Image (cartoon, rainbow, N blue to C red):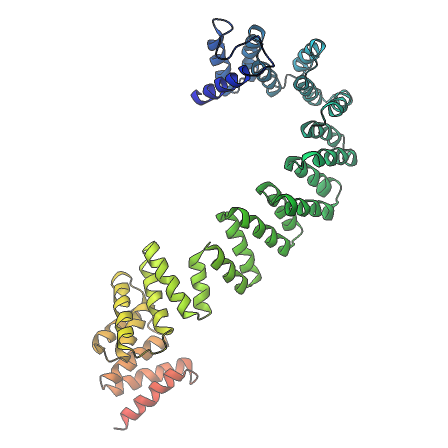
Length: 419
């Protein structure tokens, strides 16, 4: 309520500065109870008691002929749907002064009372006088109500050509698309406007809605991309990501994510799936530093190792092991436990400790052939070749002879058994 009063008083100040009402000075009360009536009027307006509010504004306007009081008076009557009073009062005032605002109130009241022919006569006269987009909209609304859509469109197009108003454009294309079934024309009109004047939220939303209804995925995607270039908002980025994902165009999706930074987690998954280890490692480190999720550190460690030219480099191995230990100390995650354990086993670093990590992974996934292979390799490194052989037979039964690393382990264990 306080903010409403403040805005109202501010509007009175600016109107007081206008030359249209020279008899009332700014910030000067016209009668003693003016402030009280303002508060009563605003309170009724806020409570949606529009007829009561209109009465107060009517008194204020009668005692202090400010345009703001007149405006609020008619607006409250229209909100109360008291069209008869609006018509009577507006016609009476128009006999004294020809006022565009009064004409608009009159036309709105006539439309509300469904006196369409009278409203049309008034609206045609007003459009001829003002040539303003709002008045074309008012006239077109009349023709739409009477289902004269071609005529309504003619006036909307005339209004649009005055200042390329987006509100008029939206009404135009809705009439084209829905009422006249000129769907291609409606889309073409929006496309033309968006390329010349820019793809605002209003224009792009309507265009996207039409493309979606037509199941035109490419048109929908291009619309979202144009809007995103201007606004960079999260909602539009998510829409673009969904479309690329639906199309399975992962190359284009990756490029968009790289340029927009709209979803780095998804970009990381794309890098990993594409086995782009270097980019994966860099992005995982960035995500770990910004979000603090320990699993990103784990992904960084694995990608560093997988992308290394020399995986036997002691400095690299120790760095990766150190990072993975931090991960498994905070997260009970089988993938990282096995990776850490195997890395330690394969590099002859605390083999028994490495085996303990692999066993933790196997507690969660006891039938995983890859975790069983890691354990078997650990036993082999400890010289327990019979235990290793038993496990490798299970591994071979599960994955066959296709995995080169597994086959190299089998051969090494078989050689161990012969000695």
